[in-house]
View 1 (cartoon, rainbow, N blue to C red):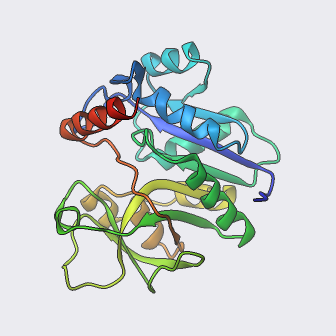
View 2: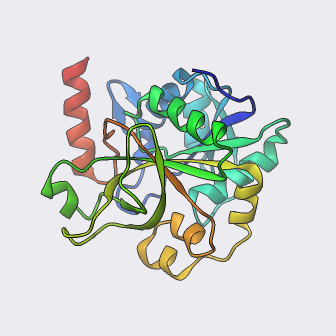
Length: 248
C-alpha cells in the first residue's frame, strides 16, 4: 500500500477528562493508556508520532517511554485545537496532513490508521474519519458511543459524506455507524477549523466534529471491519483490562 508523504500523527491528551480524570496514566498490561496509544500509532509507520498535552505528568510519561511529546497551552476547546497548537510549536515543514488520534483508543489497529491515511491522501480529501458497523442494539443505545450518519450506505472500498454525529439515533434511521476516534485533516483545513467559533451543537453534544459540519466543512467517512474499544468510563477501563490481560 502506497502513501503520500507529509503526514504526521498527533495525539491530544490531558489529565482532566470529566468522566474519568487521570485516564491517560491508568495502566493496561503494565503500560499507561497514553503509552499504549502512541506505541500503536508508531506501528502504523507513517512518520513521526507526537503526543500533545498541557500536563507535565503526561509529558514525562511519554518521554520516559521513548515517545515524542510537546507541551501546549491549557484550556483548549477540543483535541483538534490542541493539535494545531502543537503544529505551530513544532514548526513542521513539508507536512500536508495531520492525523488526530484520540488518546483513549489503546486498541486502535495500526492498519486502520494506514487505511485512513491512504483514503484521505489518495482522494485529496480535506477531512476524513473512520466508522464501523453497529452489531447490536446495546451499542446503538449506548450513550457513551458516538455514532455517525452518512449520506449513503458505507461499502468496504468506498466512502461517504457524514451528515450528522450524535450519541443517540432512532433505531429506524438508516446509514448509522459506530464512529472511531480518529480524524485526518489537511493542515489548511485544520487551520480553518480552529479559527471558527464553537458551534451550538458542538457545545451541546460535546462533539468537536459538529463545528466542521455546521460550518460546511465536509467530513468523509470510510468503513473499517473492527471497532476498537475506546475508554470513556471506568467500566470501559475495566472491560479493556480484561481483554488485554486475556490476549497477553
